[in-house]
Image 1 (cartoon, rainbow, N blue to C red):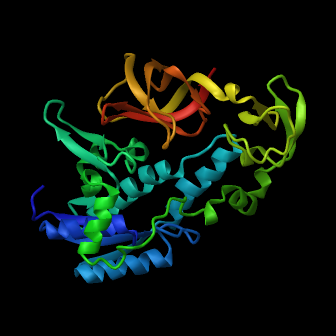
Image 2 (cartoon, rainbow, N blue to C red):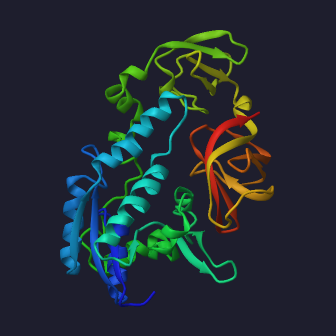
Image 3 (tube, rainbow, N blue to C red):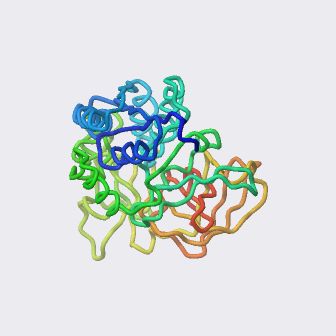
Length: 357
């Protein structure tokens, strides 16, 4: 990209986004910072500390700094979605929703209005233009432990053509070292792994406080329907969960399913948490325009899981995908995302609709 281009940097007040701004400035780009306020509960992005720290970094770098308010959009597209998914017995992925609707949606639109030619973030992933296919590709970050490509699979060609991810070529250790050498005020700021609007990363306490009406006590049953105990509300349980069931049994029990219709939590042995495949909806493909033929690839069923070889077949005229894994997968969870990979290239992904036993 030409150095006379104007770049907006999404600054959360953390090390990664601050270093992103510093690196682009050092490379000669005309940049300005933008910090999003997302909700009153938000800490990293949207909290007063985030704005203060981002402003401090912007002042240190001598760049313009803007604050944009997305409280309404964040509530509708992330918080309301978060609660609604749990109420339907699904486990949401708020980071995917936020990236899709807010960071790579509303923020991009507003930054372009502010005169930016592109937007940069501190995500650990890479965007490259492929001359052969004439498409922008999303690729894994080089640091396998920090790679964030999984939560970016919803990006379309327009967004990919207007975003820069400078940290994708570095490891986390290297970014810390560079931040220290550049004397950034947040160089030693601790990293947050929590959902930004959930205090203490306790989603159960959040639901109890914000949406108590969706919690209705009911039965905990085994896979044959035998009642083993009582639960406080289906949304407080997730597939694969072991702790907090409150049931004495001869062998460890795990949540293997959530039956919202009958208000039951279904438990079983660890072996019963494994399944052969899934059906996914809300599909997005980055490397192709249509999905009409089956293909073999690798996939992940959650951010921290390992990739496994699978066969992906179109259903419902390509609106759904049937995914059958070579090896059974543990705790395939409706509401989470399945993301497809071709080596280090993200093919696309979708939201898990149902489990295929």
